[in-house]
Length: 72
Image (cartoon, one colour):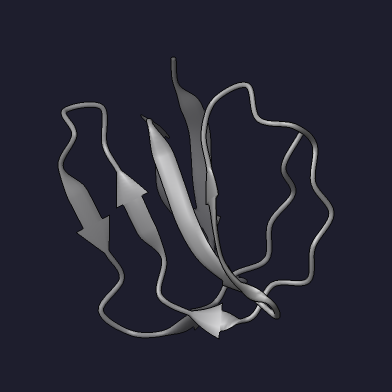
């Protein structure tokens, strides 16, 4: 199973690929999202963005960033 992940800046798309999982910070801690997840509505917070690629390699954003997401 895969997720379509798009990471955007105000000027352009900087990441567009299929991934297995994403983990990001919310105002109540970190949350992980897997394929076929239940719909969620949560406030996001500054923090690292972790991405598990299809080959099971993990990527982590070196700088903390504000993650804004729409998950359905």
